[in-house]
Length: 375
Ligand SMILES: NC(=O)c1ccc[n+]([C@@H]2O[C@H](COP(=O)([O-])OP(=O)(O)OC[C@H]3O[C@@H](n4cnc5c(N)ncnc54)[C@H](O)[C@@H]3O)[C@@H](O)[C@H]2O)c1
Image 1 (cartoon, helix red, strand yellow):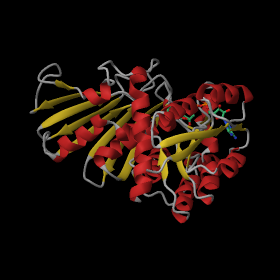
Image 2: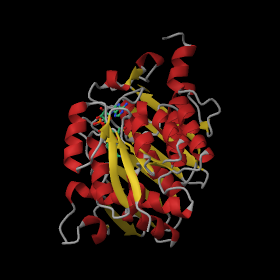
Image 3: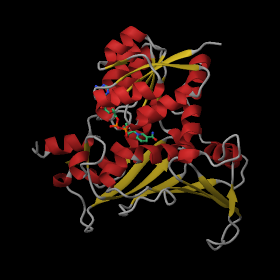
């Protein structure tokens, strides 16, 4: 049985979560990390008992020659390390959002294909047993024909940041049930109800200094309608409620003979009702999956099961390497999700349906600004 040597770039919050998952997997050996903040590097090294932490990730890749590198930095540093790892034959597990724009994201996928390495993105909902059960129920026709999805963002942030930060998860979650998108019709608003304009485009950290450095964003509320190639229609709303509420975050799946409601960003709450035309409080049955909710001692998993899901993610990447297939949460899926975000911006700008794929891969907000002569 091959043991995979795994290294981590970026030893902040997610760099700690990923390291825990790696150390919990008997197919993995955590061999080192890279971090530019010496204090964080020291704390992580002590916590995980790892011999060496580098301040230069390329040096780490050259010296440690890991089989897999986990990139848990923020999005400005997703592109270059992916290329550096792929060119060295190292498989990559990258944090979301996949890149700063579609140009980078496309190249990341293409270079990984060229060097025959796997690229996974941390869209952790994909490995949830709940989502797999939902897929199974749909296939078995338990809610009839799936015709409509209603997706609601987590809140607690203006939609500009939420669309890129959480939208990548939410759109990917929609794709899991509905497949590839055909077109988007969207509009973005300011909190006072005015349509967002080119002058409202901001850097994510100008919108909120505490948020991730995810590049240019726009708008404070967002409503987007999608048609998927499967014929399913979907709506996504980013409502900018002042409080984030994970219990409100999720998707209603509406079928011709029933509905499923699925919620939360890490752990999952799921309800199903069979048959139509019930009042909201009637005939909804909560679904529990013991294996996902509770640990081996039957106790609720800590941190809403993040460690459990992260372990499934790393194990899926190993299986993908050994079976020579795409990971469940693939880089290609990361591009598709980012494309839906870009289509949302572009549809707002053009005030019309915009079809996938976007031919111009430049960041739509950068292009809008440039074309209006705003620097
Ligand atoms: N998938 C999920 O469920 C999930 C959840 C939370 C966050 N995230 C994503 O994970 C990413 C990281 O989030 P975080 O909260 O850990 O951020 P963070 O800022 O705490 O950690 C990033 C770390 O990268 C380090 N870094 C920056 N430049 C570096 C370089 N050149 N070399 C090595 N290290 C470098 C920083 O010093 C920092 O310690 C973000 O993109 C975020 O969106 C994903």
